[in-house]
Image 1: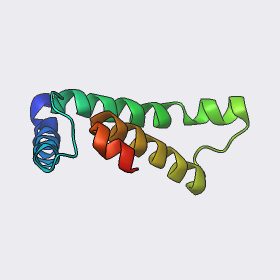
Image 2: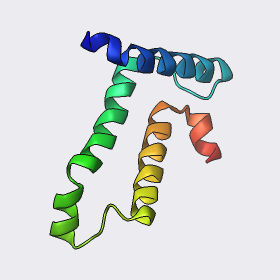
Image 3: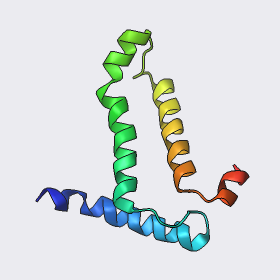
Image 4: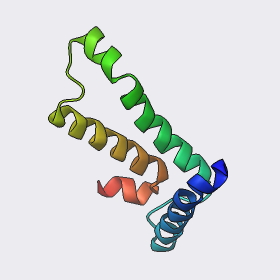
Amino acid sequence: MIQSLNAGVIDALTNVYARGLEAGCFREGLDPRELHWLISALSFFNVSNQHTFSRIFDWHQAAPENQRKLEDHVTEMVLRYVGTDATLSQS
């Protein structure tokens, strides 16, 4: 049962990754399941620790502008991870 809940996400990532490989934008040898794990880890940490970080660092992490920054950072990290050297030099 639990496997079927994430099957659609893995299928979608597999398709995106295949298209990126075909276009020469993504590097070879990545596992879509591991990519899902990476994205989930980066996203979950920000949600699960938002109150702690906000309190410790006196920073309102849930503010829309801070959420946009975090989203941009996570997006950049994932794209740098999957991208080829040529793709990275264009950014």
